[in-house]
Length: 284
Image (tube, rainbow, N blue to C red; front, top):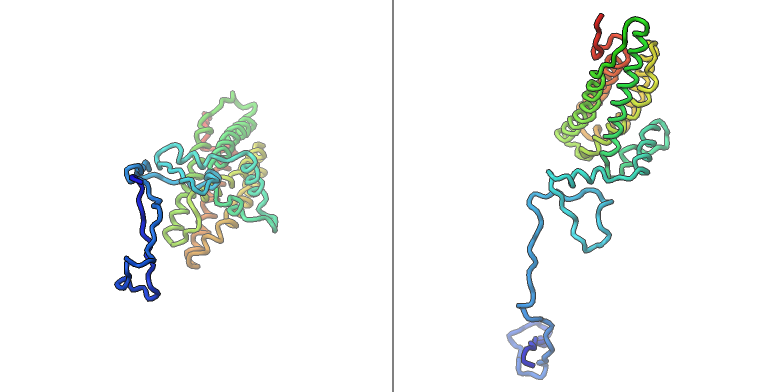
């Protein structure tokens, strides 16, 4: 009995007046205490890193309801790795959803992201566009100079394609997201905006595969068709977000999206599928 404690249970009257409670009455009872020795309990230190970013991908969360969400620091690789943690089936499903924007019953592309946008698909799609633009642009220039002089590969086409596609896919969505935040439309996250433009580059793969011929008029038609389909894909998904701003602002932003995308289409046509491309070294 030496190390056991006791707690006291007091029967208080119905009026709750503790002043009239008699501790000497027969209602006084003793029960064994549930408390352990205070010295046996230790407070666990907090090991949470300072300025840590929490994970935003629900697929990475544990099924244990008592588990503490993993913290990731903004400047650590693990913070960015969560946006590349996606399986092949998910990427292919998102590619199919992006390529069929005209179907009436097709869900908006942003809905297919289901709150877990990835950067794996956009990075590899942009890289594929760069490589195909270089290859087909080289074929187009070779056919244009066939029999005239010795043909030489010009790797400035590769650097031009990389700067154009990576720059457009990185900075234009970031600028659009910043403008939306400035005007109060906060329903679109930056990674979702990058994913939208990144998967939208799929249309340029098809255009690049078909626009290698020396027929300049055909190349213009193919690039124009690619622009029409891709800008429809962007505007269809961005309109519900942009329309959350006032009418005049939303109109200006929609026109800006269309004009910037038209600039990309013109640059692709002139730099890679024109016989007098500024990106092609001309010794004549």
